[in-house]
Image (spheres, rainbow, N blue to C red):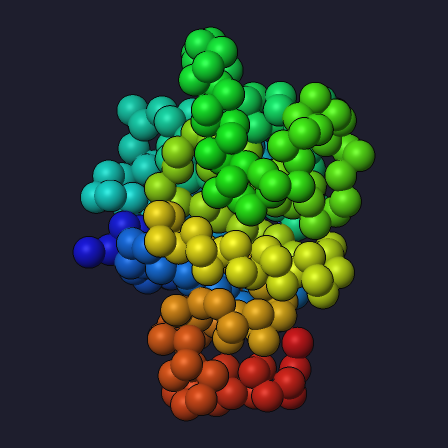
Length: 250
Ligand SMILES: Nc1ncnc2c1ncn2[C@@H]1O[C@H](COP(=O)(O)OP(=O)(O)OP(=O)(O)O)[C@@H](O)[C@H]1O
């Protein structure tokens, strides 16, 4: 069953239309890569899935986005609960200037969890889930900003996992990282697929090919092609997809 169902989605920044009649369904426990040249609407689309565009002035959204069959743009939806369910990891690792422990516990505390042993337990599981525990277990009180970029990004993933989301959105999560840290995060994303549904924006087509089940190719705000990753990269149906993946533009 599809966990995310997008129908006839249009998004405007003021006069400018950034998403044009997008239709797509995403399966549970899958990895979906969003690819396309700069400015084609990948990040905008990603942000529609947890209403991060709500915070931008003059945004108008039409159409439907359902998560677990619930319309997320309904006016009685709690955006706070939505974002707990649909977590996000950004391009630049953005830990808070607090300890490693506090970074992971942050969302839990906001959601009212105070019990010390429960906090300890969830922080540990989340750090393990983000493949960071072994590297930081003796340094939980140390500042998060003292970690390497790759570790900081895994910490941000742990922070997202801590509140038990179903879906994790990732906006170019490895573009600021070196190849070794990138490989670790890719391995981690593949591991996370067992328990979560992942949607990832990437500029790196090899990355999309390596980790994703499905790939969506965007161009000028349109979803040009959406297919199984292997199929899209081996037998693109649209000439524009073919031109993009063979490096003719973008
Ligand atoms: N906050 C905003 N206000 C106005 N226009 C915006 C805003 N954010 C994005 N846009 C415009 O919407 C279009 C899509 O941008 P978006 O960032 O979604 O593309 P992208 O494919 O993610 O690009 P990149 O790969 O460079 O991150 C672009 O033309 C961009 O200039």
